[in-house]
Length: 498
Image (tube, rainbow, N blue to C red; front, top):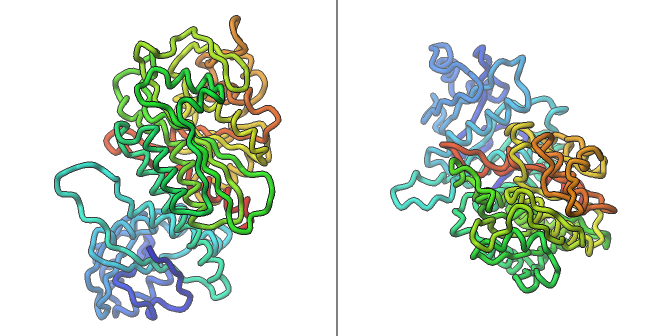
């Protein structure tokens, strides 16, 4: 996909399709008004006849607009008084989706921009690329029948941008294009069935990423190596599966990266979660192939860094295994010893993600990290608390948590801070071990975070619970791409490249 911006007039552009916005009261956006003049009043005529209402996200494709031979997509902006950045994103996504259903190869987005305080030139470019990736993404399904045609769009030009802002917008497009490609990697991994996307498959994907990018090094720990690391919690979860576990280390060292402590990203990689002996209800269990979206996010983030060539060092850690209920599976009441030496009584085998993350977080210490961020589809409790709108975030370093929350605001991939005070850790007490792996129903997302916190003393650490945001279920089930926008923006800022 090629991206660029324009700063003069769309009449100078050579494209197959132009997308322009119309407000609900019939008022044309600035660029739509210019487009109307170019068509000899054709667009106003359509509105006056009542053929287009301008409701937010509504589209109308014109194969020919008056004197203009180029295709035009009219997109509704809603009411002018309520038009904002969210409405602009919706309009751009709708216009690109409409154009993608045709055979056009190039599109100019001439949609009214919200005020600069809502969307500066850098984020204008970044969001255009992100929205394009989301709008044109097609699920990597395994259907053998006839599939809908793949969009042919290969060039998107957005504007207008002031001449002074072109460089900023182009840098945003560059980062946004890399983030969109990384998001597609993450979504593709999540959407694969669990009999394809196994722990070994994730390891091969990581190896392929390193092979294609000299800035990325990879190390994969197999079962004997994991045992040598004494990762007792990780091994306990994996022991009921015929699929061998893999612990994946991806080390990105960007060009001109300063010799400072790295950021470590940790991802939960349960490639399928039955709940183990604490078996889940059958309804919706097929969606447990998405229990590795944290791992997919880590792999996606490293692929983004390699494409964007950011001057930073980032280490990605993925603990990958299945959680199965065979005769060798760990049982409720079993006590295991973590890599940190702390003992854990496993009261519920379906609280397995925190177990594998505990050993991964301990492994992160060897890099003397500047910050550690783990991502996991960890708890149903977080879904109940925040729904599908915000990822949960908590940690032991307020500045780091605030960075993540701010990144989410900038790219419309929002997270919400949950409290992580010492009272929640009290719920993890048990008579028989240093801690239990669950703390009761109350505050379940937070007690899971409190469990992880016991393995992060001395680290600057944040935990992101993406159970409600990384995928959607039901008839439209699929990976959403979150929290890749948030994560990549955080990395851009940390690299000083935004």
